[in-house]
Image 1 (tube, rainbow, N blue to C red):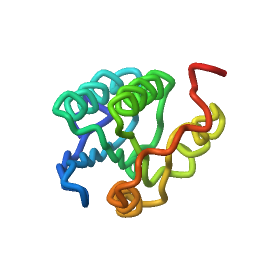
Image 2 (image 1 turned 135 degrees about the vertical axis):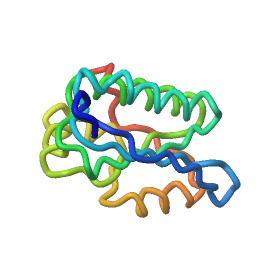
Image 3 (image 1 turned 90 degrees about the vertical axis):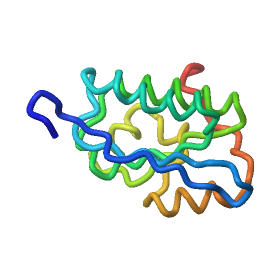
Length: 138
């Protein structure tokens, strides 16, 4: 990480699912705070604009996530779902998972213990399940 940034996006792999549909894997590192939110939004938007509506966001190296970054995730999740895709989260640290649970987003997002588990779920060629809860309708 550079001294001025407390975050980094390590990779963006485009993998092909069983049905040939691409899956983007984005691995984030550091603090996803108000400073990082625009870069996170840019990464997610780039994936969704390119037609890759299935995204795995690997948060294994994320130490903190702010409300700004949570808003970005919800926006990307909605856009992906509107296009028949999904944004699936993987490898949340205990602290990040606690934040998701505090705001109820553990009931909104599909969360897997590992990125490979998330990829397997997307490769199952099952349509995205209906969300149990939309954060905009609390």
